Amino acid sequence: MATVFVTGAASGIGRATAIRLAGRGHRVVGFDVDAEGLNSLPSTVETRVGDVTDENRVRETLPDDLDALVNCAATYELGAVEDADWDRVEEQFRVNVFGTLAVTRAALPRLRESGGRVVTLSSVLGRASLPLHGTYAGTKHALEGVFDALRAEQSDVDVVLVEPGAVRTGLNERAKDGLRDANPDSAHRALYDRVLARYDPGGTSPERVARVVGEAVESPSPAARYPVTGQARLVLLCRALLPERLYDRLALARVRNPSVLRASVELVGDAVRGLFDRRK
Image (cartoon, rainbow, N blue to C red; front, side, top):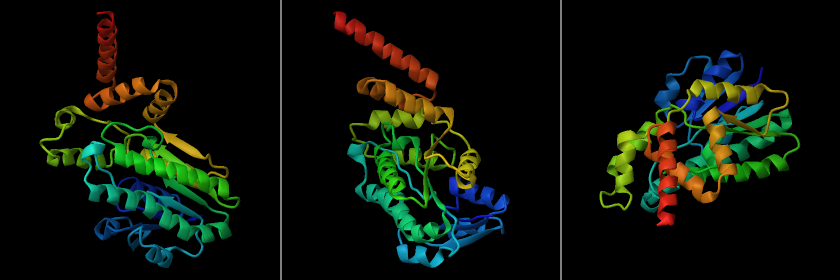
């Protein structure tokens, strides 16, 4: 069985991944800043407290016989790009990008010795953004670019990206609640209020994503990318096939409405109104 180091293991996808891999007999070392969350993991998971951006601490805690690194640590905020709090923007890039890179750089020499792999939780938003998700999507776009290059640079280490759509980890709900504190005079206040009242991104369970991560860890020949859920694949398909302006309108309709059906109806309505407006 493999020795796996999992960041963000105290909650969400990282927690589900650590539990799943340990249940399959792997030695799992869970790493997170949340000591209380780590303490609630089953005893089959070894735990280490630390910040992913602290490369020295990461090096101290990485197992010598490392076979796989799973990067799950991340933070997430909702809001228009124009309104984004600068400290929160920096925090998202610090954790999601720089922290992921710090852990990966520290782990690569050990993974090269074992012929191991790096599995990184990106997102469908790493290839297709949505309104109010700009900063988070920016961090995931950055990861996609960096890890594409890393994959091409490595001959002894497999580099894998897992790209979920919405996942019910609680992050979406907390990020949505954060819109309540947004500037009441914002030009985007009406959109925030509609999102607070109606938007539900849906999503799959962390356990489903953990199953895909487990496949990426255990496969003798892992794929470069693993989109997770039909919703994620549909977003990527729309992004690839639709003209930019039409995709933008579809993305906005999706954020403004609690269901794909209502978003589609609104998009069709917009298109019809546009057609009549051009004929006037």
